[in-house]
Length: 156
Image 1 (cartoon, rainbow, N blue to C red):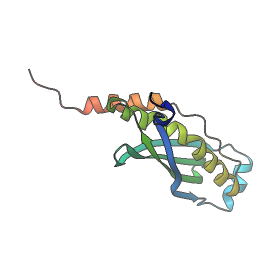
Image 2: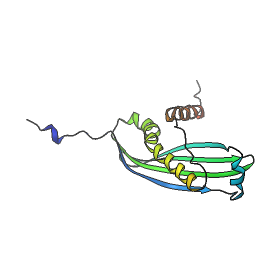
Image 3: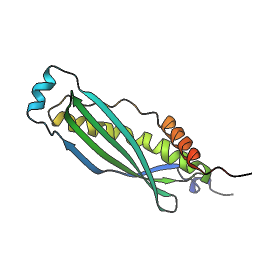
């Protein structure tokens, strides 16, 4: 008779660590920009990028990169650049590794990165910047479509 309690299955996805890899916050027009902000709403652009690198067998670093620019008319109100990383262990079939790294892992990192952005902008003198949820599935599909378009077409 075998004891199945000793044979616990490995977790499919394990978060080993999360950390701020790089953070930059600038208010180039301070203090004058605060007077301009009183009468206007800033125009905000958000850029999102992802990077995933293997560290060792089944262990990967995933970095969620956010770049946020807020402008009032032609003046920059603030700039936030955040690279928020995580180390993940994946015990899944090889064909699922890339989607998990570029969809599920960033989905786990995002709430923490969102909180950091909100805290930094609030502490910088602005209302907290609350990022809307990101559709990492669409981002992944878009990345795969771009990669497919860049592949050289085979000749018949």
